Length: 182
Length: 192
Image 1: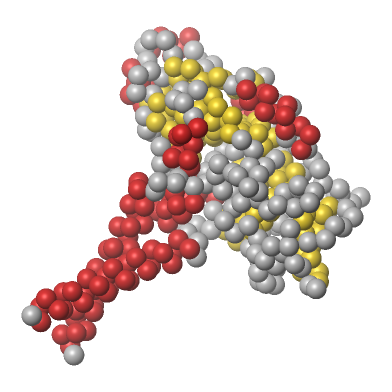
Image 2: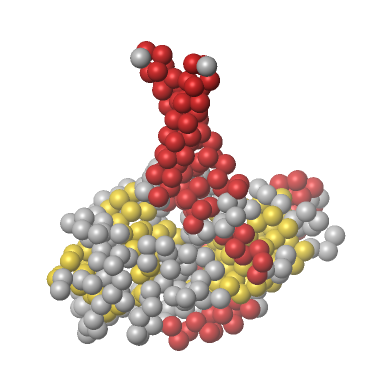
């Protein structure tokens, strides 16, 4: 009996390890996470509109139907990226996600404070490699550091009424994300 | 022989307990750092790199993108203030005010996060669309049949989830949750 209880205790302890391991490994193995869902729709380093969600079809669950949405799936391996989007009358935001869908930075039109949100996206190494004087001349340039080489830039523009969705989508169509010439 | 049987038993128990606990945790939505105000719950850490491992696993499995913390915050409700789960065949009133934010949106989803089909193709409201009373408060009736005023159709589905998203808001990790964050109340009005 005691022997059985000891085996059971061992099983419970091992079960705890299995539980923690599965929870920690699941994000790296998930095949239907947001990045994997968007990857087939989005060429690398290009802004692509994400279709508005409908009851029959939605790219991702829990999308906000009041927003027009576009995505730039980036890869910084070769060069940093220049990103810009004009801001709408209502509300525009740009959010950055790593390859594993972690939101590491987000900015909205008010924080940007201009008619256009403009920024440079680079890895920490690329940021460190920037010549010092260039950083001074570009003092008003917003630099965002990506913790991973790949990830997602999600651009959203609010359509305060359903009739405004088309103009919000038009606005996002003029967003740009381009690798910087070296 | 005993050793083999014992270790097989232990491994079986480990797999059952470990996988069972993971399945349970992800399905029941157990994530740390949730903030509940009335019927509403938000996980402000989910929009930051400090997202906890359980929430990360849930996000990876469902395929959603959490709203980044510089963008806004999402509050979810699955039941009314009396903790009765939402029933799409009943009328539910959502009333009061929202915390300070430049814009907010309210959206109705089925439990999997899909929009719900209905005759008027309305899936939610934005703060600009809502009809308010003279005092600045609002009331939204959520139910299967058309209503005057702010009506959010449920399409008659059995269970649904409400998401209230605040955009460009001071509400977040550092907020003291209390009088500063007046969330709308949710009460059931009647059930056929």
